[in-house]
Length: 263
Image (cartoon, rainbow, N blue to C red):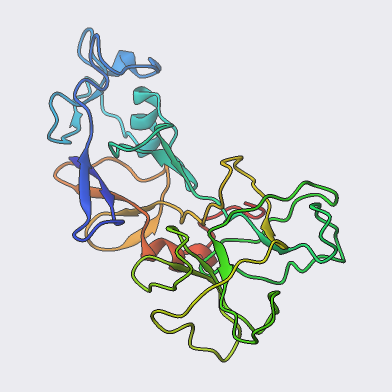
């Protein structure tokens, strides 16, 4: 069978292949639970080259699952986290997570005060809102800006909040991210000026010193349907599978239980 990782951040999406040597001597072979099922000196599940082909070669009648393959490889694989094979990956793992919550620091003390600060600022496409404990230190990111529709120096809930990566103070639909759009508004127009408000802060769950958006859960596809990533499906001959990351499909499966409560 073939198993390819599909990164949908790009147009067209980019495919990443499995490394050669999974389940092979001197390769990537962490778990030896199934050694007795394989040819002498080999795992029953192996990759021999960079074609993303998984060879299923058992000396006994047996059923092997996705979980078994990733155990042999020594990589995390579940409905939340999968290996990250993209060249830019730093940690080698892709995990679904909620966006850092945007919080309006009403009393400007740099702390999250539950019941006082405005947390009713849902980031578009975020997962379940995950607020910090009361008293937690809040962070600032100069890229978090708002459309100053009221011509008042501070943000209010009728005004759109955007993430402006180049901090040029102008809304660009191609690069800027709408974080919060008030009900019944169509969002800002191209070229609309934006402004900072020192009280528009966020809680830095990932300690990256910048605001991080949501990461959708990984999705599996066998060419006929998409489903939440799972360790349970069995490996079968002549199947072509995709593990899809950064997918809009994933955002639509959140209600189906792809993401555990509280993420």
